[in-house]
Length: 282
Image 1 (cartoon, rainbow, N blue to C red):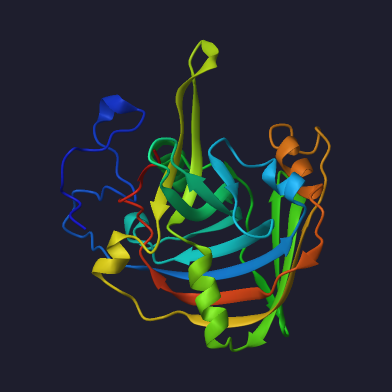
Image 2: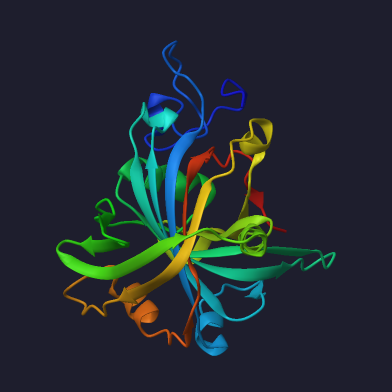
């Protein structure tokens, strides 16, 4: 990727000039662009169409069975953070988008919500990409024996608990299914209210972050190590006092009926995650 391209990307505070980030590197001779290292834990379940479908914004419909996936990423060696890393917990739903004009169909994964434990990717991802990012405490996964335990909390309240036990090599069909899940990429609903006129939106549209993405296509990385097995996710229902600004989100997730679990997956490898080629869905 050419990080020196125009136009420059600005964020608040605007008066200090262009903002560094995943899509705009610092003007420093020490910077080196390259892939980041990741470990991805994925669990999922089939739910009820009425409940899962109610989470989708206008323009999206469920793709296949009503399925909800929850994934936890540990990211490390991130170039735009000078080698630092952070963790992500996200809820994704396989969906289909139909264009309101030409009838074009795009399959993807709708990002209903994602949490990160670092401010910088939250700010850049919300303002530039329209990803529904929130803050949470996301400690590294704890591995003991054959089980990996993952916890997410906010100010002492543990709102999500994930366990994964993956020790088997997947067959070729399982790998093909994993690759087809993503479709064209990640779909998000970018919504920003207009200041002072709260019922009016400054931005209200769907965005698509292509996968694998232009940077990965330009510099393909080795296939990740993949293991499959069993896993589960539990959302603990908070009161308003537990999570004053997020309780309504966790309550909806906790109320989703988990009819049958999906096979859990663990992936380890390297990837580019700059999302520079992201665009608006018509």
